[in-house]
Amino acid sequence: MNATEPDLSARWKRFAEAHWGKEPAAIPFAPGLAPEQAYGVVAASCAPPDEDAAGVRFATAKQGRLRAPGALLPGHHDPCPDAYRQRLNRQLTGSGWLLTVRQPLWRDFGVWARVRELVCGLWRAVGWPALPVTAELALGEHCTGPDAPAPRPGSFALTWVLSGTMTVRLWPEHTGTEYQLAAGTGDLLYWPAGCRHLDHYLDGCTTLRLVVPARRAAVLTHVRGLLADRMQEDPAYAGGPGVLPFPPPASPDGEIGAAEPVAGAARLFAGLAAGPGTARELRVAWAARRSAAGLEPAPPPRPAVPLHPGLRIRASAELIRVPDGPGRAVWAANGHTLSVEGAAPERVRDVLRSGRALDIRELGHSSRMPVKTLIALLSDLHRLRAIELVDEDGAV
Image (cartoon, rainbow, N blue to C red):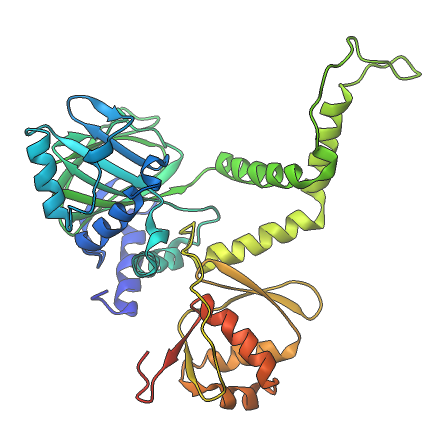
């Protein structure tokens, strides 16, 4: 990122004051993400066996969305975005095309972290998203988006043009106004919730779009999915409803209720919804989401490396902390969580928050934590990329 963190936060503050929750806008706001970086993530998403995933979509201006784009997706013979564009323009004989990939950022921690750094300043100004943010990368050439016009009126959208040019037509709900926004490399397109939109990808266009749910109905969908997953794991939910008598048997007072498998599922759903397990799961998920700035899924933890007391470390990510009962807490970093217990881990966290480099032996003395236990904790933090190893000169 070219701008320093204070500069970026100040830009987001001005943006929020001028545009947030108001009318659509197109403004200069370079994201600090190169089109080559975006292409690398797109190409990884299109590589076998993931090319058939629901998040990969390919369309042409003449045929619309193709169910099996095959060789039209990036391959090993397309080392860079320019090579890929040139091949497709020859292969499609000038017909426009559009490749979009939904939720691809987790494939490259560097790209994911850059986007998270970019949006953190906005969230500090307007509030942190309570639900996962949908990220989408797109490469297009003289093609209209396959949805005409695309839905999602219940979400707001931020679209950065990483290269080329594009235009967007917008129809805010409850008004007769139509907007047309144009943007080039380094511009940001924004529209609030309640807008239907139609994208037009023009010359050499590469975009990053973030879509954030803005209405309560999205929360219901999220919680319902969480409870449905927990129900599937409950033994009481095993088995199917089978064949049921009709009318169902009556109770002694003659009242006829719902069929028992259905009524039992409703009781299980209500019990799980009201139980402490669900409250804890939502709380832990919020900690992970806050540490990821809403960008889910997060990149997986990296492989473990052996640590020893002579190594020097430094904190490399904010450790989000939420209480989890007497003497217990959940830490979150980079979209992942870690449960800790006792006062010693909290002392470790306090020392790490200073940001200075120190060796593991020194950290053990400061935190009064046995070295063996400390190394186990630091190994977990290193896998979550919350700490980094540093050399004698202090470089990571």
